[in-house]
Amino acid sequence: MKSNLSAFLLLFLLLLHQSLFAKAGIVSSLPKIVSVAIKRFKGKISPKEIMNHIPDLNFSSPQQNQTLQEIKGLSRIKEYFYNFGYLQYSETFDDILDQPTVSAIQTYQQSFNLQVTGHLNNETLQLILLPRCAVPDRNFDYDFTENVSWPKAGNQWSQKKNLTYGFLPESDIPDNAKKVFGQAFTRWANATGRLNLTQTNYTDADIKVGFYVLDDVYDFDVDVFGISFIREESPFSVKTAEIRLNANRSWALPSENNSLSWEDDVLDLESVTMHEIGHLLGLDHSFLNDSVMYPYILPSQQRKIQLSNSDKTKILQQNIESNSGYCGSWRVLVITTLSLGFSYMVLLA
Image (cartoon, rainbow, N blue to C red; front, side, top):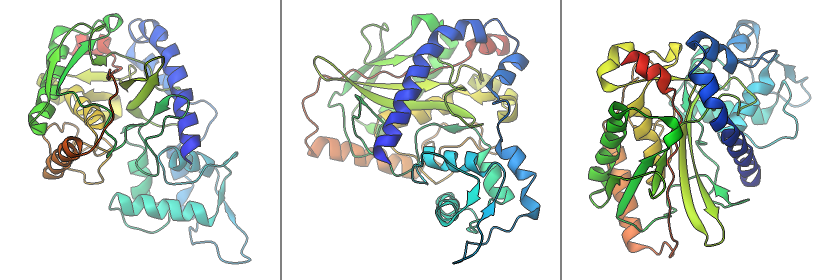
């Protein structure tokens, strides 16, 4: 699974670089209703469509010599579970409900404290439909295949205590949004008790912030709000880390809490920024829904910026490991690329 996840990430990166140049045309010139329509995968089965077939299906675990059940659109769910670490890779995902798929459903349900049935029940599908981070939840490694890797807890890539961040000029981020980013960086710095994060220009920054379109990356109707990854570049093995958020979303400032609506693609900028920065500082996804590292945006928690007790414990543990363990002598450049639709933010502000 490790090499396949890395290959998927490489494809992701290639598409994101192409999306950088497409952003200005898609986000700034098209009405929101058109931008939202662009992201949908025409002619493919989405979780919403699968839900229409669920009531009449029997999701009992396959028995020996029993004819395996075929569920229209289940291949899309299998791809989803593979992308996020719950199912092994397959050259072709089919619509057959086999035992590995039932086990993947059960693992997913147990992880997120859902009723463990092995069935694609309404509760499970409703969670799958929510906006989420593109970083896998489980079964992935800090491994530079083709010079890229997911960020992974327990793998320190920076010994620096003074980090700087800067904003991609092409993104044209307004000052009130930059202030929100700064608040998120400061909150994490205070939690670590050792880091200092300050703003500088984009070229010289350790952490680089920008905006990209992410919707066409998955061959599935996945509502992705962002991604984090680390890159190793020649000739000096410079480590860079990037966080990219989705430019086809509307992003609300803290003063616009009443406009938040995940169903209408209006997300809280500070909450998602907190989540993606957490990945760079060494935190994996948390299955506790009060954590800022919870991978989904829940309808009841559309703004979540305060670190939970588990978040604080984990970031302090990362600092202990960083101070006591050998982390190499890399020259480090961290890139946080947050892809946001700020044409919408200007309209909301």
